[in-house]
Image (cartoon, rainbow, N blue to C red; front, side, top):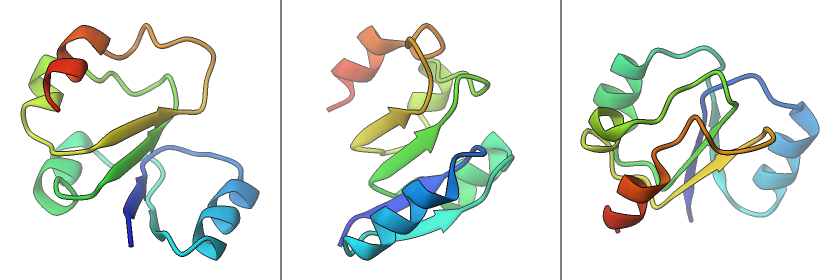
Length: 86
C-alpha cells in the first residue's frame, strides 16, 4: 500500500478516490515543510499545489517516489534535481 501525503488544499473527491483505491492517504493542507521533513519524509507520494516550492534543499530531506502537483505547470519544482533523486 502506497502512503500518500496531501500537503496542500485539493478537491476532497480526489482524496476519496485515492482512499478507495487502497492508498493510505493523510490530508494535511497547509502543513509546514519542517513537519513534512520530520513526520512524513518516508511517504511514497506527495500531492501539492503550486504554492509549495520543491527545491533542492527540500528534495534532499525527503524520499518521495512521486510528487504530484495539482496545478498548471511545474516551475515550482526543481525537475532536473528531482529526476536525479531516484
